[in-house]
Length: 127
Image (cartoon, rainbow, N blue to C red; front, side, top):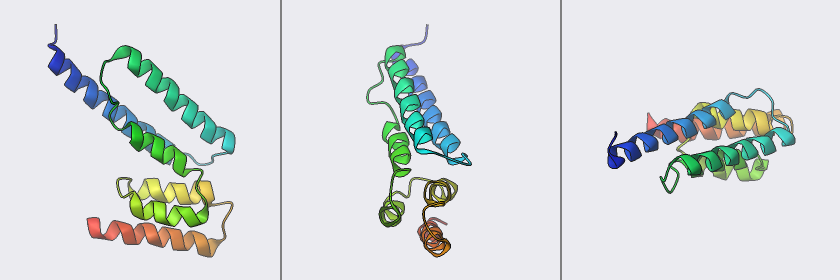
């Protein structure tokens, strides 16, 4: 038997990795409709419900990391720029996908380039 504190640490790491993997998967989508976004949320809620039955870990590690990323798919062009500046926890690739996939068909090339430049500017200080 694994001692409870060790089990909890293992669960925490597994959950964190699973949540990070979900965001990475969402960042790899090539196309996303409104129905697809809703399914992302539904899938994540189902995942959380199953986790809550499997483990006593509360709060769920990185839950907000996934929820915030999914909600970003609903942002408008104006809101996206400030969101990008506020959420440096996401990779350049993840942020770039949000701009290209969720706003790509709704904004012109100049606006998209501006948002991509914001991502690049935000990423520079981390290097």
